[in-house]
Image 1 (cartoon, rainbow, N blue to C red):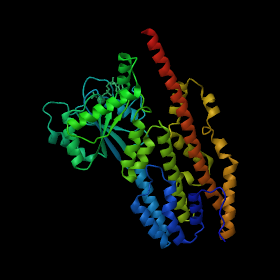
Image 2 (cartoon, rainbow, N blue to C red; image 1 turned 90 degrees about the vertical axis):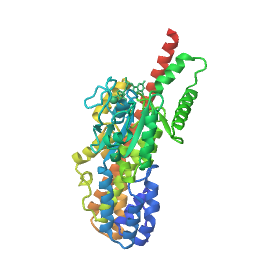
Image 3 (tube, helix red, strand yellow; image 1 turned 90 degrees about the horizontal axis):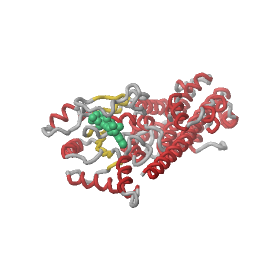
Image 4 (tube, rainbow, N blue to C red; image 1 turned 180 degrees about the vertical axis):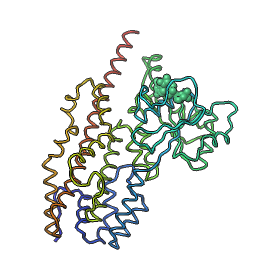
Length: 440
Ligand SMILES: Nc1nc2c(ncn2[C@@H]2O[C@H](COP(=O)(O)OP(=O)(O)OP(=O)(O)O)[C@@H](O)[C@H]2O)c(=O)[nH]1
Ligand SMILES: [Mg+2]
């Protein structure tokens, strides 16, 4: 008789059944619907094609093939190269946008120089500091009167990018429109970003203090951009309003989500991880993708009956696990450097921060009794049906549950810190507005 394990989610249960080698026809039927409950709202790591392949191989009980397909998908996701082209007139904020996406401040080593008078003449790559396969390309502007489209496209090697971000801080130009049209013709994606909206709001607030309404001003900017794009021949565009000084505000979170949804499956994982943890939505996307990755690794390992499946899962030695926790910190922007920045912004000590977060204490996480209890539960159920080596099964589940705990706790902390930082920022903005009013 089948015995369900309490506290297991539907996907954990699938993992358990997989490990126990239960009815493969049934597993093949359950695989896609159960997998769908696990993936993030922008999609998962497995492509439709690979899902179909896994289902077919499961039906034939070819477990080695299932493990190979999962491995292939994970390797492709982790190593996917991503080349993003950023283009726009001089001074519109391209370098600032690139730095913000790379999580670098102006003064940091390796950041793109900002505010310099000279415009970029040659395309210039900026590698992401944490994800070396990702490059942001600062492309020269189209602004010269004798702009030659064909020559320009050749010079910037336009076919090599995954997508383009067109930046403007006022109106998009006719040359921009020509460029967009010809690049769209070859099937590449373009996104319009209107920067410096913080400046517009500030100026409008000063100009018309009595009638000022933030949402109305933003709507006017948006309508204006759309009318301008339509006028120069790019109707039905989508414009994202952004401040490079305040990426968590305005349309940046929507831009992130749109880009992620439209990227090919194998490029989604790395792009989600590199996005700064500036909104609940981006933290949730990272959480879901990392949990999916742990689950896929566990599934692969169980298909191969416990062949060690990744450095992080290779045995349960504490230094190895601590290294993994470090990696999760880094993905969610809680690495040592970022924590220093956060406590500085919040005006608190690291000890104070530790009093309202949970993930910075490795030992507290590892000694969580509920993980041991859940792993024991799985072992009992497994061994009562299959026999086998309880210690190996225990190790497997303990490591799996611990990693889920790592990811969930770090993601929860990232959200707590995000909200505290946002609270502090809006307090500063209010104080600034009040002091502006008083000085007028
Ligand atoms: N208020 C505000 N200022 C911005 C924003 N983005 C950039 N800036 C400022 O605009 C100026 C130009 O920014 P850059 O990032 O150097 O612009 P760029 O497009 O790279 O300029 P070039 O390299 O000359 O083509 C700098 O003084 C930035 O600090 C923004 O969103 N809001
Ligand atoms: Mg620049």
